[in-house]
Length: 144
Image (cartoon, rainbow, N blue to C red; front, top):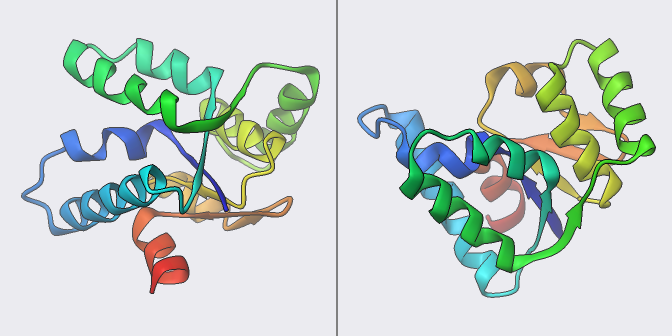
């Protein structure tokens, strides 16, 4: 099963863990990463993840996140197809960066697109054959 985690997911463990939702999403995301290392899931990476991660002002976080590239089965680059899908998603009200992430996931044939971004979760639950959910929803659907 192919999964794409957006930048929000990768950064979730660095957020304020005093909020229960954030703590639960963090635990779910860490479990997904553990299962990915164990071979249960195929992780997809993209040029947009590289771009967003490069803009993280915290060097340690950037370095920790980029380490996940070594677990990926595919690294999606910008293509006309990716940009076309992203443009279509933007017409549905999804923000530019989010639409590029989702378009990369679609290009790679991901089964799931995981995010903690409420804006994305409200606008997209199933797009072009890919399920959009948060880490907790993914755990409930796939590992429960």
